[in-house]
Length: 342
Image 1: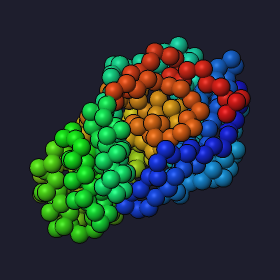
Image 2 (image 1 turned 45 degrees about the vertical axis):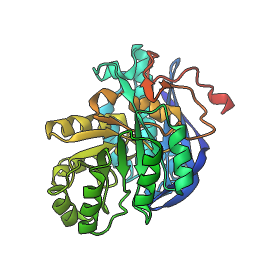
Image 3 (image 1 turned 60 degrees about the horizontal axis):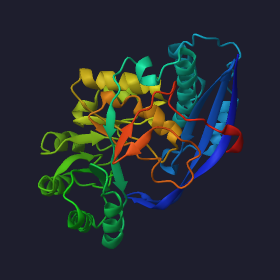
């Protein structure tokens, strides 16, 4: 019999985080612990306001779940179907349950999750995200991220050129650019991409609004840089038509309902010759650690959500010089999680 416990938590950011759609200094999360016999599995729902979930909605959803009849070996396919049918939306809350179940499975099998998925162990070069800010602040943030091999730069506001100039004043490292749906005119978007192609940019993430389908079809056929869908790619079903609008997809556990579907999304993306980016929200080392186990499937890694907060309650995989080093702890890789003192 599985029992479920939840704890509300608020992650505090080290710096004000600004994107094209607004700014914030914290992120609400719900932490989950599943108990099965002598094993404990941990999960997490991270809920930036943009996606519509809240601590109250996540707690309410999880409290309605009944796992009393579930026994090991867990049938993740049927459990995932049950969660999806149980209530629409709630993708982050579902992801919390999903990753806790995977953590349990890994601990029962005594294997890290990458082995459960039959993936190789990979050292993952994650990007470090730099939010929209003044040129002076951006230069400081870039300097602080000196150890990282890639930087992720947020654009989509009214000072894109100023931001890139500030970054290039400090470093010539390759950049991931995320416009967060901020470019609303396809011709202007193409002009910006043409300008950025000479700035050592790796790709452009979500250049236009997620529902600008005809504009994205026009843009993807002309862009000199890869275009990656984030807000426009949420679930497995979206991957089927993704190549009409993007060259690749950004997979996030909080959008995909967790590891079970994220793995399916990555497999489908590979079969369609789509590039794969593995991304995150502001998260603890729990969710970041879980996602990192899929890292061998990704072309690009953006798993720094735990590095920009001041009160991560967990310890997971080590990050040194911008590289995530997967540990060999069973499950998702948390080191001595101290649930009772959170």
